Length: 408
Image (cartoon, rainbow, N blue to C red):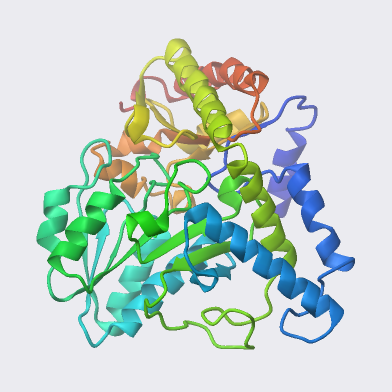
């Protein structure tokens, strides 16, 4: 296996222009973020923030300052409402498992949308197997927008938790969270609401207090921050049980020694996104539209997945290339220095079509031929031009290999 990968890497030698669009899975960390993190590894704040010495006090100060800034960016009212965790997956697990176990005497029903990320889908399945919870999956329309009438019908006295992502990670659809919360609270005021806001944070304006959400997940690498850190917002008064035990740190919901360098990096990446929020959003939208318009102008037999306009996050482009296998296209593009993901990023190695694309009505062949691309404020027009130069050739090459046997 390793030798095969090394051979593939050799084929990439000589690439002069690289464009990384696989920001669903990881990100290129900007130099400003890297420089902000480096001192915290060996020059300052390298101590345990719970200990009474200079490096510990420095770490404690850095973490508290980061908590204040992240809280302000999402509209949290109390400092302790933000808990730093190793990432989006951990935050979603803490929210769902912790809230479900804390409310197990009140009911055992959870409601989610049918296009939630796998870190939500799989957790509800686990809760069903281990603790006897039931899960209702509310359908969406062809754009991915939640059916609000079906949501209303699904809420009853047994419903302890609802989780709907503010922005879907695959097709970028923005859900009407304020209306969703109002429906839930009108039907059952004690039902908690969680949203995975990882794909909204830094790209779509939202305020957890104004939206009245009980819990919200955000992630570092989704905004070009370091991997290995994210956060869960938990409204003051919401009961969530810890899902891990260990050394007590500065946070009551997540034990262990906080990773100060990563938290600082997450905060710096957040500052870069929010300090020039409107300009960043406009730039991402411009780069995304240039990419999508160029693809539709240069490549035939393509379908745009998800909504357009204001219903979609500004960074997201998901396109199905008919008569084209997505994994083959990612490899072909990689050889030209363009890095994208195929289908659902979290399930692609299982060789299963994206459950999100199937839910909005795409056929299996269309889902298998989908490519997900996400731009950042750091992409340039030259980057997009390079993609539009190499992509049509890559698609044509794969379609020639498939030939007349392809299914559209």
